[in-house]
Image 1 (spheres, rainbow, N blue to C red):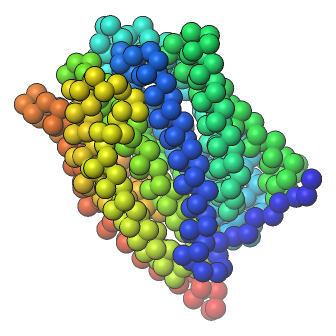
Image 2 (cartoon, rainbow, N blue to C red; image 1 turned 180 degrees about the vertical axis):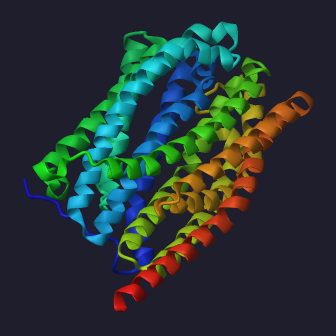
Image 3 (tube, rainbow, N blue to C red; image 1 turned 90 degrees about the vertical axis):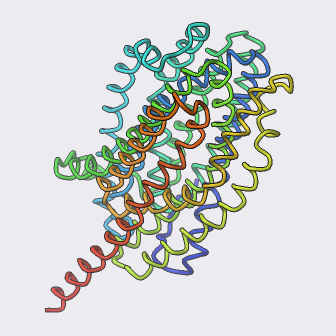
Length: 457
């Protein structure tokens, strides 16, 4: 099989580079979210609204744990992208090796701790008694599959770091399709209920991770580790952790605010748990292109940072933000005008109150989706340029904003407070992220200018 060589995004038309890199990410995210929608639809339509609530009740804590996994994997890929952009392939491969070792350690620690703490987590979430057994079986199985999630996220992050967004998309598409068939088999044929939905998820994630690994070994010679690459340099490991852990914590800190939001919503009863579960799936589907645009822009900026091309970094940020804001118009139309109809994917027409609540949630957040686009691009570029601690702080701001709205106003305004929590969090985080991004770019520009001046002298 011929070897594949990836081309850095340090030359050529910037808009074209970002769009070409974004397209497989968008399709991959949409496949993933389509699976999530189908998964939720199968659970809601086949097993009923209580089963839907059982799967949805822990969505925030899943985001906390799995988001940490995703953030760490993305963070470990940042030095890989930077070194690839600079042409230092030996250092790049060292970071690949070190990131792999650290990922394996994190997988072991997270899996054991979350499986043990699963009952306490569900009690902390104020899970309704009638759905607790199914909620436990679903969540503990998802936690047991953390190594599968980390395997795929780390390897796909490495591939994207060297400019290949197509391969992760192909395997994610295959995984999502496999997941749907496994869902139907486990839930309908084997009658495994919510447990079957979780089993289908972790098997498909594991398969996609293994496919990434096999293809890297067979086609991506630039990532093949030589003996001299397999050295655990402590300074490089420290740098990788400084990138990965703050990014993982940023996802988790944001999720803590979502957990408080989930807990506040759970206290309103099963009706609103079901409505929130359905609305959340639609929200995540519609927002997935934002993540693609942000990842593409951040990867572009990371590689050009390694190549010391600040003009391309600044232009790339402008283009990335423009694309995200343009898409937000489409997202707003979908959520405001078609939210209730989309909720019928998961619920029967007879569930009038649940459908109305889901439509209300989607309408409220849809009106502010441009703020989310700006936030995603700004934050991921800050991360991609190496300022992961500052990006983590934006997650803390989001967390505090959600907690204030949910803990302070749900008792008075009920589900309306839940519907407004995201928007407040996005506004607060944007007010921090945008000036921070400007500051980071100026700092990098000055550092590179000083470095060039010193080299000339």
